[in-house]
Amino acid sequence: MKVLIIYDSTFGNTEKIARVIAKTLGGFGEVRLSHIDKMNPLDLEGIDILIIGCPIQRHKPTLGIRDFLEQVSKGTLKGFLAATFDTRYRMPRWKSGSAAHVIAKKLRKRGCSLLLSPESFFVAGKEGPLEYKERDRAVNWARMILEKYNITAEGGV
Ligand SMILES: Cc1cc2nc3c(=O)[nH]c(=O)nc-3n(C[C@H](O)[C@H](O)[C@H](O)COP(=O)(O)O)c2cc1C
Image (tube, rainbow, N blue to C red; front, side):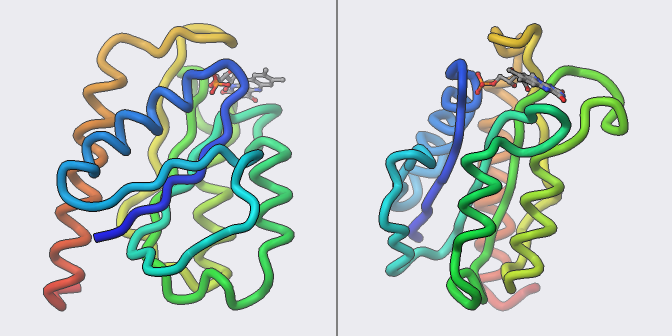
């Protein structure tokens, strides 16, 4: 199993979550972790699962992630299994906005299949820290991705 995690992070909290996910999945396969600004060129060779995560900024994904999704050429992401997450304030989604759902929608439009529902991890303030237990939730989320992937790979979904 090969996983590519693409993330953006202004203050490091989303990066922490991305690293927890990478470490958890790394026990079961090969994981590449890429900051959106350091990712050129996009290399999807052999990738089984694409995970994208970023903070919500002004109710949306960051500019880096939005640009990436706009610029990725049509057909490039077709057929990939994917999962998306964001970091944000703990408040109703209609107030916080969403990055994970927006990214998921764009990925689906480009032909990806989502393994799991988009997930949010919560920060206590603009610069963090992550709320207590969010790292544990990230471990569990990564394990769920793995479970779903194994079911899919066995032809169960
Ligand atoms: C310019 C800016 C706008 C933000 N807008 C939102 C928002 O609309 N909704 C929300 O829940 N959090 C918002 N936040 C809080 C971020 O989600 C928070 O800074 C982020 O989760 C921290 O992750 P990072 O350390 O990876 O950057 C905003 C933060 C910044 C800096």
